[in-house]
Amino acid sequence: MEERIALGSGKIYLIERPSTLDTDLENLDTMITKYCVAANEFGAVKNGATLTYTPTNYTASDDLGRFTKTIVQEEVVTLGCGLITIGANMLKVLVDTARTEETTANRKVIKIGGTANAKNASYLVIFEHLDAKDGNIYVIIVGQNTAELQFSFQPGAETILNPTFTAEGLDEDGTKLIIVMDKPGGATE
Image (tube, rainbow, N blue to C red; front, side, top):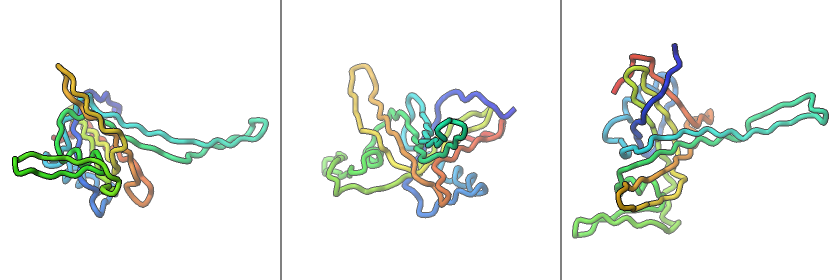
């Protein structure tokens, strides 16, 4: 049976978009093996991740409603997650105008703002849902964070960042999302 119940969270990996990104089937295994490594883990996930695919459709019909045709006009794909860890390099990814400096007192300073400081960078984002029994699931997009940056410092609660990466085209075909599912028992960690 191919159907499965996905329980639990996972890991999120992120790197700046590679200059060449080959999404052919035979190269997906290589992509996952190459980029889903500890050095590319973006942060510790808290409260899981949410993948959303939203099509905008247009339906044409005759005046009597006898003939209709529906087409997809636009597609929006987002991948949101909660991150419990915070770091300067993470903020540089989440805020396009962020830049960091170090003081002589060994402090990192993150400056945010100024549209002239925008990097317009895109990132390869892979969410890995680990499941040794039913098989891992990988969600792959290229995009950038389009959510606001919000810090909530509260007594007795952790601060969680909630980025939402909005997908761009991955390839010449306009693919915005790739989902890879390992076969049951074939999961790797």
